[in-house]
Length: 231
Image 1 (tube, rainbow, N blue to C red):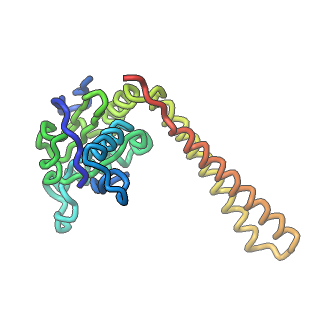
Image 2: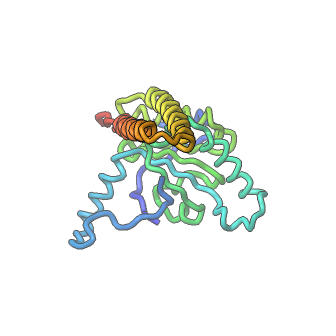
Image 3: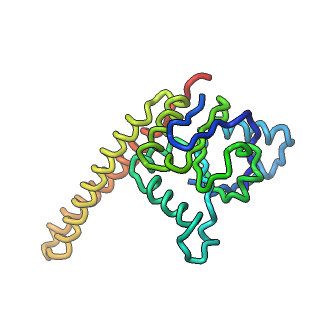
């Protein structure tokens, strides 16, 4: 588990109104492994990394320890995972954060999460650069409420408004769907045609679709190239 640096007190709240001013908790040592930089250099790099994006930490029971039984803490984990991260806006909005999944045992060893309650499951949004955080659990683990918390945290950190970015990405997902439908139709025509000239034309159409998809991929990447606000 990658350790995070300590910071000041955490503000907690049962619902999404308790705000304050795709990794699995693993990782390695930050820095150049071959050069083995001094500890002070490694810590400085780690601090820079932590400040590069706000953190979203999901603390939950290890589903592998549930033995196939969906009850108690295990049931609450599966319910929260489906309710919160099954939501399209939450799934997209969380891209603005560095996401970490932790068991309660790992979270208990992490100084940064020392004051984030013992509720399971819980979602912790951390802005290391501003010493700001919010803990969401219980009734707060609803997609609409949690998305509101993501927007608040992201909009404090980045110049771009998260909701606007998510809405643009949703439109792009619609474009991906249309490209997939067009590709499926062309593939179907390819299986039915025996005219070599038509086959050549259809293959050209497929190449054009691949170019469109690559261009769309670039637009998505540019969309999430967010600029930091000044501290």
